[in-house]
Image 1 (cartoon, rainbow, N blue to C red):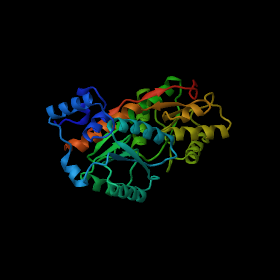
Image 2 (spheres, one colour):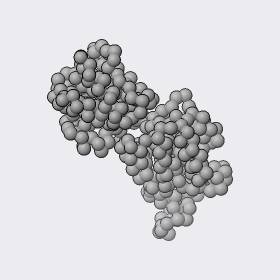
Image 3 (cartoon, rainbow, N blue to C red):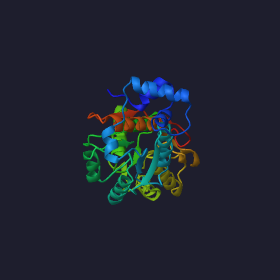
Image 4 (cartoon, one colour):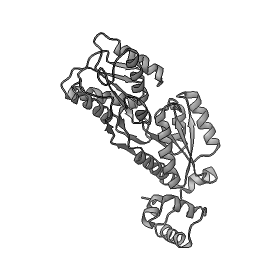
Length: 332
C-alpha cells in the first residue's frame, strides 16, 4: 500500500499540514523539521499521484464542499469541521450551496472543475446522478459526507443513521411513550433514521401505526411545521415526535406551541444533528449528535488517500451517533 502524507506526518510527529508545506516548499518550516520530513519521504519512497497532477497541471490544494441548503444550520457545522481538518492537511475548502437543485448541482460542479479543484466532498444530498457518474468515470476524487447513495461505488464517510433513529426512539420509549410520530424527508439518511424508528418500536413490542410518519418535500421550518400539524391535529395524536433533523424538530415545536401544547408535558420532541439550534430553542432540544470533529478528520483522510493512491476499493466509514438529552423530552 502506498504511503500518504498522513503516514509521513505520523512517523515524523508533525501535522499533515506541515508535511504538505515541506513537499510544496511553502510556509516557514525549520530546517531540522524539513530534513526530518524529507528523510522519511525518501525512506518510504513517497510519491504524489503523478497521473492526477499531470492531468491537472498541478495540485491546487483546494477541495470543493457541496451542500444542499445553506439555511440548515448543520451544514455550517459540516463546513467548520471539514475546514479545520482541511487546514491540518494543507488544503483549503471551497463551499458551494446547490439549493437541493439538480441543475445547480451541475453548474457548481462544472464551475469547480474549471477552477481545477483537487476533489469533491458532497454533503447530505445530491440529486444529479449523471453528474456524479461523470465525476467518477473521469477519475475525479469524490467522497460522500453524512449520506450514502446506492448503488454508486464511491467513498463514504457518514454516521450510522439507523442506530441514531434507534437511539432517539428508545429514549422516548424509556419515558413511557407508545404513540410516537416521525417527521421525515425523502433522503436516504432520513429513510435510515425511520428504519431505526420502526426497529426500536418492534424491539419494544409496540405495533407501528399507520399515519404516524409525516413527510416533507423540502426541509424548511414551514414545511416541518405543517407536517407536525398533520400529526398533532389527529384525534389520537402522538405523545412524542421524532424529527429526522433539528429543523424538523423545531417545526414540531412551533406547531405544538400554536396548538397550545406544552413541551415536554404534553409532547416530547427529539431532533437529529445536534446543531446550535438545540440550545436556542425553548425548552432546549434533545437531539442525536454526530461526531463531527472525527467525521471531518476522516473525510479529509479518505479524500487525500483517494487523490494519492487512487485504489479501486472504495471505503465506507460509519461512525456511531450519540443521544444528547435536554429539556424537550419527558415522561408521559
